Image (tube, rainbow, N blue to C red):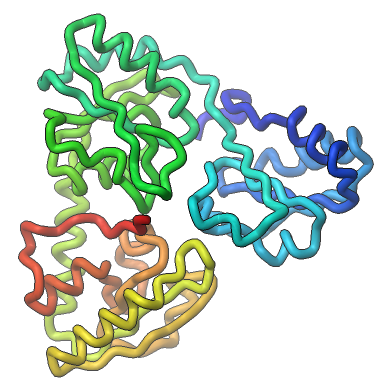
Length: 330
């Protein structure tokens, strides 16, 4: 991730909210890439307000992953780096600080014109850059492109925004290809699998445009599926985090597995890691928690970790060519 000076943590807004609510104890929660700023922000806020500041030390994977324990111990919890989900109102004292990027996008968007092949371009990004999509659209349209910034389902806060578990704002059958503004590969990879279209990454932090290649990821997923074909006992993972919990899906998958004369056990847990699962002896796991787990941690589990769609391929309920990335949609 780029240097923290490239992001707006809205410290003045945080201070104003604390003063307006007369909060005495305040929690701060950060995703992994922003935790290095936690101590400095806590010091600044504490000096300005006199409030007792508590920092969440637990992993944070998205807006689905609010530190509920800390929220219950404090008057306010500020959750940095994500926009709220439609179902995030289960904790009433949480404020989402989206941490928008200050990185300029004009130069890298102009560079993308050299590589864009289609006429109708879908524009997508994360919440950090979503405020720059209109500028990007104007640049491309001035050069003859037709741009689409689509609104996603109810879990998506802004048009053109994608999450690591939701690419509904990218599904537009009329687009020829997609331009993703940001760094990293997981989000554009999800767009590519969700749409079947070519995706370019315009990274404003390094001023570079690159075409996404998902062949390596597909080979990894093919290997996971292949290792699971003879599985008899499956462990279905359910995450207890309110924003990730999909027990209904787990029960459906368990029924599907048993219809194929195999067995499945549901394992419910809060933090899903390879170390947490190492003692469970199953032939394959099926992940219903954060969809990134199976992709980001590939090869680190003691048994193959399938997505729900990959399980369908293993059981013969879905064709390989119909593989898409798992999503948590509204």
